[in-house]
Length: 127
Image (spheres, rainbow, N blue to C red):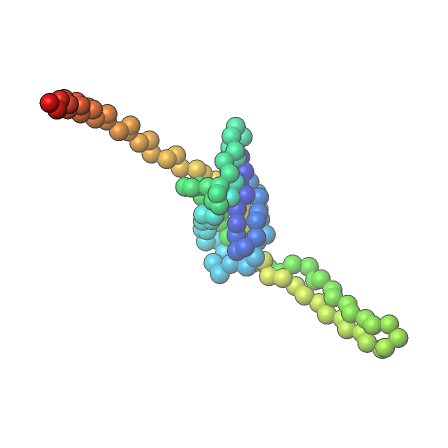
């Protein structure tokens, strides 16, 4: 069972028991988080695709830790001009363990009762 979830504008594949590194959240470590923007839900038998989201589908998880990714180096150079710039960047992340992916079944609606059709009025003959 898996789901494709939109978290802070990025899409992630959520599988129960796996850990995800997502953009930084404000929750403390150990806090429970719920993601409602489920774009695709697959339970192993059927796949439901949302338009834009799957109704009543949620993904819940636990915040494990916050951290920073490996450094990415940015290097600019213009040849023969003596221009060189070196810069680095480390992106903040939150590691979340996916606990549960669920799709609540929609309540079944009763079929509307059939109304008796009105009898047609007799036509009057004009003389």
